[in-house]
Amino acid sequence: MDGNDHKVENLGDVDKFYSRIRWNNQFSYMATLPPHLQSEMEGQKSLLMRYDTYRKESSSFSGEGKKVTLQHVPTDFSEASQAVISKKEHDTHASAFVNKIFQPEVAEELIVNRYEKLLSQRPEWHAPWKLSRVINGHLGWVRCVAIDPVDNEWFITGSNDTTMKVWDLATGKLKTTLAGHVMTVRDVAVSDRHPYLFSVSEDKTVKCWDLEKNQIIRDYYGHLSGVRTVSIHPTLDLIATAGRDSVIKLWDMRTRIPVITLVGHKGPINQVQCTPVDPQVVSSSTDATVRLWDVVAGKTMKVLTHHKRSVRATALHPKEFSVASACTDDIRSWGLAEGPLLTNFESEKTGIINTLSINQDDVLFAGGDNGVLSFYDYKSGHKYQSLATREMVGSLEGERSVLCSTFDKTGLRLITGEADKSIKIWKQDETATKESEPGLAWNPNLSAKRF
Image (tube, rainbow, N blue to C red):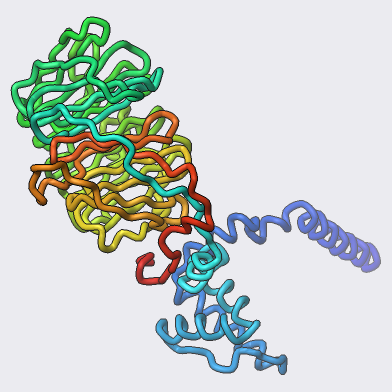
């Protein structure tokens, strides 16, 4: 009996042993999180928690008699930050120190690394721009301009004189004059899918013009104050308008019904842009914010609050999914659709900026209220040219302001509307070379980039 009992006991031990083996083989992976979940958990820890773990590991390694290359273990956050910067420059152990505490993704965004990246980046060379033609015809400030989106043969301007004029792009001659508003025409937009022109005015109205008959065919009523901006949706039969009543209205262009009203801005809206995918509406306002809108939900996707003053101008990049915005002394570009900050432009002394335009060659133009034209490399944010506009004979010096701008569809001609009642066309100098016209010096500095 004792022998049998002993065998049963041995068999029980064997069964437990093999059960443990099978368990380890089949479920041991559940004892630890997968690497991607582990990194996600580590990312949720605070900076001081990760630093405390690193300090304990360093202490345990020292207790085992292993060589520790970190001479001094900081005891607070400020010392840790200082240690990161100093060690990164003088000690090979710093890379492991930084990666362990800040995580690789965050470590790449440190001031030192971003500054090194800035220094290594070189702006692309662009030929300088010069005045090609001056066009006169309006009796008031030229407040808006739009190019023919189909054939690139004409452009239209709107003015304080309540009229819109269509000009031949090649010759600069007047083709026709459209009259219908009773107050300043603040913005115009030409459809590339319909023979329609849309105009908005301080008289609170939005008008649709048939370009084949040069007549008004629809009026859109609903704004409670002056309308400042209009944009046509690139894929849907909708137009977006906004103005001093601080709301954005999306209209069905055929039924004239305001299908959606977007509410959120706390001040008059200066400009609105439409994109084919979310965010399908981008708006800027005097409340110093840029808002990205979810049209389906009818609410804001994200609010960009980096600007400190009224955001007067925005511009969409024609080739990449990004947008630039400008307020006084500050131009920035943002990625869409999440809205990350891409570039801070060298714009500290540009003054009030009324208009932005971007062409396919990554040239960003900014027109100032003081009459200064600034040209930037879009990728690096480098200002490579700055020149003052020429005011018309007989106009006041205070009427040198650049109020509106647009590039033609080739990106080779820039059209500006100005406060001296003139329209100017600018072209790049075709004879210029990188050696003869190097442009303004590229001197990046940390304070200018405002990291």
